[in-house]
Structure formats: C-alpha cells, structure tokens
Amino acid sequence: MSIRQKIVALHASLPQGVRLVAVSKFHPAEAIKEAYDAGQRIFGESRVQELVVKHEALPKDIEWQMIGHLQTNKVRQIVPFIALVQSVDSVRLIECINREAERIGRVVDILLEIHVAQEDSKTGWRYDELETFLQGEGFKSLKNVRVRGIMGMATNTDDEAVIRADFERLAGHYNALKPRFDESFDTLSMGMSDDYNVAIECGSTMVRIGSSIFGERY
Ligand SMILES: *Cc1c(COP(=O)(O)O)cnc(C)c1O
Image 1: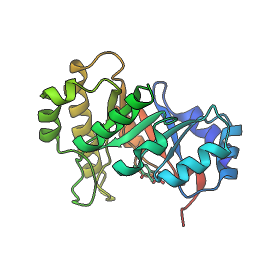
Image 2: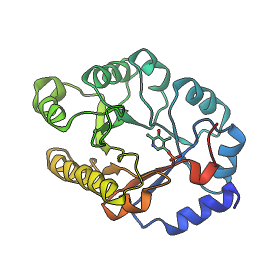
Image 3: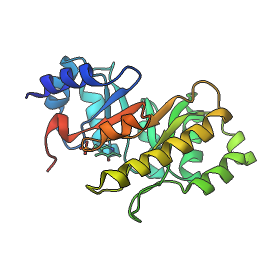
C-alpha cells in the first residue's frame, strides 16, 4: 500500500474520538506531503531541528506535535508554532515551556508523559512524583501551558498481557487526573504501530503511528 492508501485506511478504521498522529520522524518532506494530500493534518516529530525545517517547508495548516524527549535549551525554537508538546516529563521542562510561551504571548498545549513501562530507559514522570507536582503552588502559577492530558508508552515486548496492563495503568492515571482539570483535558495519547489496537481497547483517544504508515526508519 502507498502512504496515501495507508492514511485513508487508518482514517476509515480508527473509531470516532481517536485522533491519528502520523509520526514522520526521519522521513522526508515528500512522504509527509503524500500523507497530507490524503487528508492527514497532524504530524509528530521527535527532534527539534527536523521539526523546524519541516515546519518551514510544508503547508502551514499542519498541526505539528513534539513527541520526543525535549531539551530545555531547544524549547524556544518550537514554542511559536507547536500545536502540542506530548513529551513533557519534568518540572524544569514545563516551567521552561511556560516561560517561553509567556514571552511571546501564547498558551501552549501539552501532555504530561507518564512512565509505566517495565524499562528504565523510557522517559516520563513517575505517577507519584507527578501528583506531588500537580498539587503544589508551582504548578498553579503556570498560566501559559494548558494540560490537555497524558501520554505514555507500553513496555517493548510481544507479550500482549504486559502491554495491556501498561495501557490500563495509563488509563487509570488519566481517569484519576481528569476531574482536577477543566474539559480541555481530553487526550489520552497511547498506542503506536505495533500496539495501537490494544491501546484503543484500553481507552486511547490519540494514537501515534509511524512505521505502519511511512515504513521502517533508517
Ligand atoms: C517513534 C515514536 C512513535 C511511532 O512509532 P512506530 O512504532 O513507528 O509507530 C510513537 N511514539 C513515540 C513517542 C515515538 O518516539
């Protein structure tokens, strides 16, 4: 199937209420344009430099999202145009995004990335640490970020029971946090090419799909 056909097939098969982020990292602008021409408007990238270059080269109605680990010294480059930062995983980073957004008079939508996978390597908050932060005065003073929900990844394994348990934990955290925010807290971002169907069964409202659309990354 071509990129176009894959986008059309995904849009047809995803349940209502589940948004598709086409993860285009490492793939060229032409591949993104093909997905765009098939109707896709939300694209996820994991590196700031690549994101900035692609934002400049491609149509302006694309909704660019940052899904990879974000260093504070690169925040300034994306804050003017980014639609959603999914990978917010520390106090330092959230404060930095808030400061840069305030400087240019924007409110930036973010997701809080929560670590549930059984691997040390993956980024994200520990849930108890996140709770402590959200209850503090420091969080209440941040006026230029809007928390839209949470993001997470399952353990990298073929064992579907483990993957499902990870997604269920994320969904539990999402439901626990939701009452503390207003109705703009509506996004549970979980599910990638190999596990998005399980994620949707567990309540995902946003899937991040790369290789199933664009092929392998090199
Ligand atoms: C690369 C990446 C994806 C997409 O992974 P695929 O397996 O190619 O679908 C999703 N989420 C994050 C955070 C990623 O870094």
